[in-house]
Amino acid sequence: MADVHNKETRSRNMRAIATRDTAIEKRLAACLTSLELDFRVQDASLPGRPDFILDEYRCVIFTHGCFWHRHNCYLFKIPATRTDFWLEKIGKNVTRDARDCASLLQQGWRVLIVWECALRGRLKLSDAALNERLEEWICEGQQTAQIDTTGIHSMDAMGFSK
Image (tube, rainbow, N blue to C red; front, top):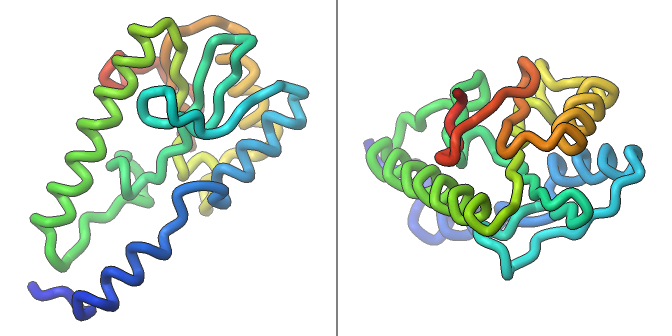
């Protein structure tokens, strides 16, 4: 099926998608601030340019959009138009995420992924629930984990739930 937009319109729409200071990043920053944690944002010298870096705990946090990073939740829908294009594009994101996660672990960083569905939408976690899970992971010392609408879960070095 053909794209519903011409090439110029599609290009303009894609350029308009924010890569920093998104609503989900702002919500997570507010949670980290409420927990009185010191953090840096988007350090380009680290693999994957993590959204948040907590040097004191040697951990990084990514906020992943459920569509762009193919999360198995109600926010991810395979597009009906140009399906092969989108699946290839999203597949490359997933591959890059796994590579970046493995590289960060190799460098001695701990990695947490907070999925968009946990931060916004009809099933999002409350601030209290989100703060509890963040604090639990940051202080507990687990190498990798992810937070979604159902809570916090272990994941392997490739970014998949265990």
